[in-house]
Image (cartoon, rainbow, N blue to C red; front, side, top):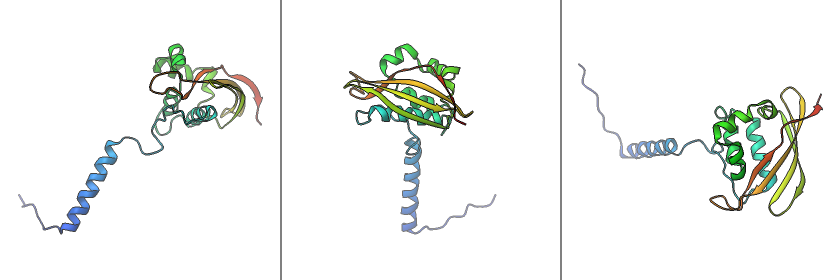
Length: 168
């Protein structure tokens, strides 16, 4: 059996390799790359920003992995909404039903504020499905009253899809 070769490594090279090894270990232990982690409700997000985060996530649902967009949308489901639509596996199935599946992979969306008070905001959302068909939704967000995300906006209701015509 041949002997393993060994050589003296300069101290500088050992230091650089040790640093690179530590950085690689840190990168692997911190989870997804920046921009890919699930955002959480935050009082700094406006009501429209919350709706936008959800729609953009659903638009690219399977990036960076299958149903990542649905998980992001669930993160912004108001606690009251979760009581009706949850737990998550049930919510996931609901989003894949005909009334909501056009949100997955849609090509475009427009968010228009309809009304807003200190604690409730309502939006008219128009979505263009991959087929070119246009659908409308009523989207409602409310401030979370208590708990970890108190003061942040989260979705309390989304109407089923309403056929709004063809974009072509």
